[in-house]
Length: 112
Image 1 (cartoon, rainbow, N blue to C red):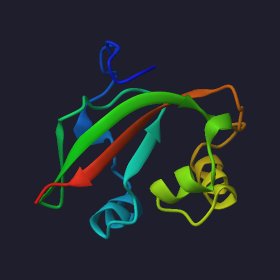
Image 2: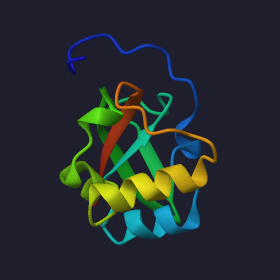
Image 3: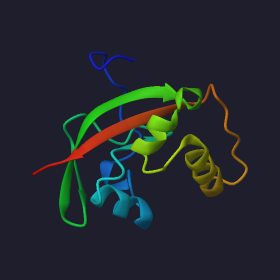
């Protein structure tokens, strides 16, 4: 889906996009610049507040788990894809890493 296509309605609100304390700390430290969720939590241009600091969502698009690379894992605050996969599977008991499974990517940056 290109950025110019109409996005479907959000499935959740932006304040639920990043809630795990360790993920919040990664965002605040600049180590996490994107999050992948099974639903759409934000629109481009929307502002997320974490501990009083503002982050603007720059891009929202879909990709599959099979599209993930070491680079996308680094966007998520991990050193490599294996570390990212392990973390995702540990918080979703019983989940299988299915390459065709679609996820929503939300890329963001700190607002000065």
